[in-house]
Length: 218
Image 1 (cartoon, one colour):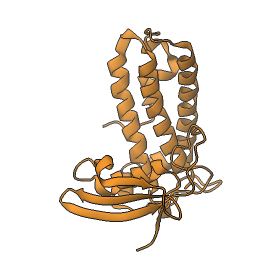
Image 2: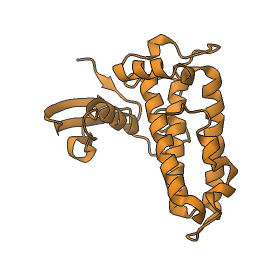
Image 3: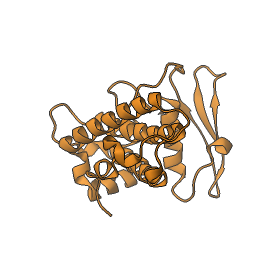
């Protein structure tokens, strides 16, 4: 079996969820563990899930304790993932945006408190990081992500149903949008205490119509 290599623990855990979680959600606490007492760190998968026993390691680089830079949750630099293809990253981006929609609906007109800002910020960074991973498959000067960036059944299906999502203009536009949202949330986080802040509708960068304007309608 080809050695599995992740760039960060977050990427390794996400790969496990995508690989094993098609039938039911994966209990990562039960089937995975971060092993640091080996020659190099690994995420070790060893457990029963959906009626099947799974056992394999995902190799990691040395664990960094530096703060995560926005957009680099799953990997730093320009090297694309060898575990998760461009279509799967689009699915992660869409999941994060769907959860953002739910969080913003819960907040409604009552305003943002610190917890809400942190929750929304996490999902903005997830969407931004997933989009950044798609970008790493986009060759310089190319108009769209090439076919070889898709190798899983799920990834190919998403490419077939959403071809425009992998075009440069969409990627760059939403990259700028997520970055702006993250910056605005960081500013709000510094301003807010435990009391409720302005309503969501008053925060232009968080208006749901803007967040989802470029996403396919269901």
